Length: 178
Image (cartoon, rainbow, N blue to C red):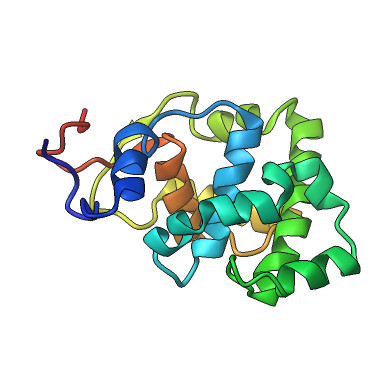
């Protein structure tokens, strides 16, 4: 079955991610937060590295429960910094807590993060390939940073938009290109 060239077909996790998640529109706030957290940790690293640690991140970050993460204090941060099963970048771990708080602020303002994100995108997926940023990712990244989110530059946001199906970037020839 033809897939995007970046998909490491020797890694079953990567194949499953490519075939069943990447580019599929997401409207569940918990899943939207999960992918946002993972994409922020991916900054400067490979997605495959983060994907391989996804279950460790799930355990370490309370199942991606943004309400719990928003309440993490110093003791919890210390425990995360000591957890060798995840990426132990102190700034990214602190950002996860701040980003959870901002995520909840956006939920309160927009009714849901889903409403915010898809509203910014015009309510429907876009088809784009060969990009690492776009005017949409520029606009969303600027707004998220203005609100206080960290590690959410335009490149990270664009990867996030691809991951949650706002942008479908499956390459021509891939069985999922549409």
